[in-house]
Structures are given as C-alpha cells and as structure tokens.
Image (cartoon, rainbow, N blue to C red; front, side, top):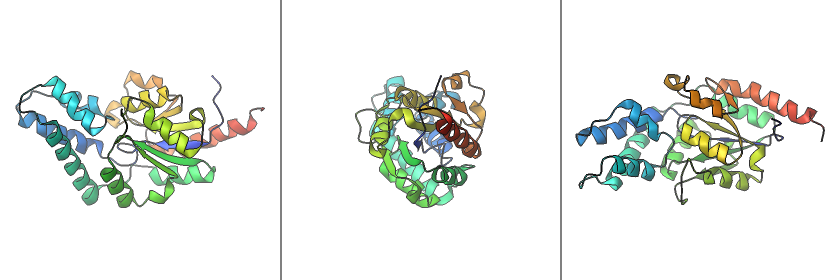
Length: 229
C-alpha cells in the first residue's frame, strides 16, 4: 500500500517519551487492591492509553461499588504520576535522537496525549523538550479520549497537515486504534513485556525503541521524494 508523503510526526507521551506507564498502573493497582478488588497486573495494562477519567470509569464499571469514588481515584493517580515525573522521570531511549531527526528532515512535530495539562507540563519541563513541539494537543477537554481519533485529528489540523501525511508514534493498543482511525501512518514502540503481542500487526511499523525512528524517517522521506507526483 502506497503511503502519503510524510510531513509530520505526532508523538504520544506516556510510554513513548517518558516511562510513566508503570507509575499509572501501580497507582491504579493501589486504589483497586486497597478496596479489596481482585485485580491482576495484566488486567491493569488494559487501560493503557485511556484518559484519566475514562480509566476511573472503566474500573467503576468493572467494580460498581457504592463507595467507588471515580474523581478521588483520578486525583490520586494524577498526583502519583506528577510526583514521579518531577522526582525521577527520564526520557525514554532515543527520544532526543528522534526529535532531532524530525527537525533534520524538516518535519512538523506534534504531541497528542490523553494526559492532563498538569502531567504534560511536568513531562515537558522535566525532559526540557517543550520547544521541540510545534503543537501540543491533550484529550483532556475533548468529548472522547483515545481510542477515539479526535486528539490525533485535532493535532494534525493544528499542524496544518493532512492526517495521512502524519506518522503517529504510540506504545499502546488504544493509542494505535486512535491513530489508525485517524488514517495516519503508525509506529508502535511497545513495552518490553508486550513486544510479542499479535495486535501490533495493525501498525505500519514496529520498533523496540525510538532509536529506530531516524532510519525510518530517512526511508519514508526518501520514498516521498522518489515517488513521481
């Protein structure tokens, strides 16, 4: 299948730029197990990529207890994630090389995340990469978060680039669904424990870390230039 000329790269944040997914999952586990609910780490991973209010709602539907306070759960998770980011967060392998390659190939760069503005600010400030992004788009105030494609579509529109000319970089299946639904090209960079998941065949490309992105961009940009138009 012929790809559209690449003009922009749009990154997810949690699990792609910063290794915050384990903190999200631990905070979810703490709340649920603290209430006595039987839950496994594998089940917790199913919410990866969802917006925080949708994470809380997901577990409320699973465990509809009278004292299940979804707002309190969301606040606790956000507090834990921000605390971790400000204290211990480091960039995922290849982040700086990937962002440098985007600019080397004169591609626009966007951020499309389900995370709240407070978490976005904490990550961008901690990693000192805010200036690398032309557009920052959160699903926080949108009607739907991922796997709905709206956050990706809005990011592409703000970049002034057709979705088909964007490469979305994701680590979760919910994010991959969103990017594919937006009709974007996709690169999945899953966690080590999830690399063999057969669902990743839905992505156009798969890599073990972002160090693979510069070579991929070189190939995609070369294909764009060599395609008759």
